[in-house]
Amino acid sequence: MSVRRYHVQTFGCQMNVHDSERIEDVLEGAGYEPATDERDADVIVVNTCSVREKAEHKMLSLVGRFRELKEARPELRVVAAGCVAQQEGEKLLKKSDLLDVILGPDNIPELPGILKNIDDGAPRTVRTVFDEISPSFLMATPRSNSVSAFVTVMKGCDERCTYCVVPNTRGPERYRPADDIVEEIKQLVDSGVREITLLGQTVNSWYDPSALDEKPTSKRAPSGSRFALLLRRIAAEVPNLQRLRYTSPHPRHLTQPLIAAHAELSILPRHMHLPVQSGSDGVLRRMSRRYTAEEYLKRVNQLKSAVPGLTLSTDLIVGFPGETEEDFLATLELVRNAGFVSAFAFKYSERPDTPAIAMGDDVTNAEKSERLQRLFEVVGEQQRTHLKSLVGTTTKVLVESESGGRFSGRSERHEIVHVQMKEGENPIGEMVEATIIQAFDHSLLAAGPGVDPATVPSRAPKARTKLPVVGA
Image 1 (spheres, rainbow, N blue to C red):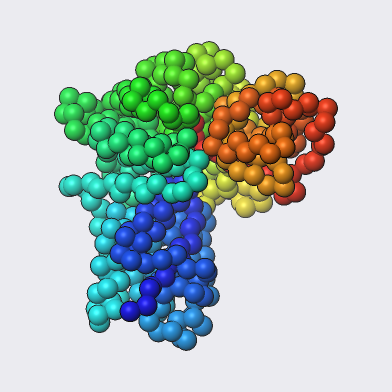
Image 2: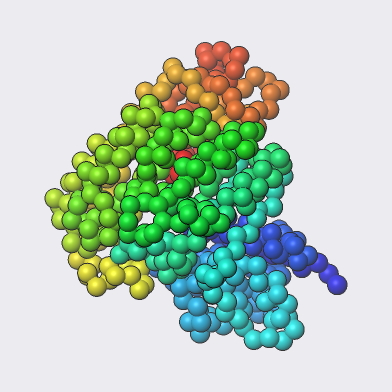
């Protein structure tokens, strides 16, 4: 029997990237091998995201590209996985005759068995069942030459923001035992990984489900998070880990113990991605974010006081139902007061089965576009000012890759840094001390250890390099 091959296409957040890696792991565990591209595959998996506008339409359009392949090889299996699959379920089979499997995020381990059943004559299959009673977390398979890796600590969300589909597509919050988390990180670090990003929809709400006294009495009560304790345990028990990030935290769970952990643990970088969504209290109430702009700024100012030089990035939505020009100006004021150096910002669009739909989408697309542009201008100026302020300073860079004779990585504050090293040196996977010599729009140029900054030619990145937002 010939070896079967798979191809995975991924859209969306870091959690989706992590899910795609777990899909690859379970398929390879069942004897599949990666295909060169979709034309060489026996199984094509489209791992979907439902956060952006028209996500279902875009997914079906992509699947439509496989019609010629499917008609030439009827045995080709096409799988829709991820949040759109969870959200739409059976309806996707009715909308596309090309799909064989609809797979929710909690059902990834079942994929090889489902594919075998279909090969044996079973009908097209939908599996979108949350594992609420006995949550499972697939352990990552160490990947060769990987400097960074994701580790899931929780999944689902209980926050119920009115614009968000995550509670519907990822289910309620479920937490992973600390022992399992630490063991997975140890294995990854033993394989050569030097940076771990902890993943969760509200990652800093974590508590240890194996310790009954750790469970908060109510998600509506003050935060019952024990996330700071988890960070301290990882730092203590995995000494060869060089950097520990996390995404995405919720402002409600930026607790005093978590702020203290950032001040005291050198393994945590001097950066945090903390979604705020709006600077208007009225909009925040309609979003059901459960904090005010003043409360948000108070917490981030406490964090900045505890960790000098810490940078912030965030998520923002413009044009939420009922947003006035005054509301938008309040957002710009918060952006300036918080000093965000980068942001993911989006125009509001209705998501299926969310409470915000009942509010009506009453801000015109033209107004949304204009506000978004103004927002980008403010954040962009703050980012450029920040990057220019770093010229002449030194920073620790965890080197991740090499291109065109230069190495690239991220600083302790999460800036992208292109580092010129001595000829013959290969620092990938190492933390190097670099001197910043030039600021570009979205990244920095630096001289590595022993390199004379005057000898480093100025060369901007070929492609426009944005500063991706990954929680820290």
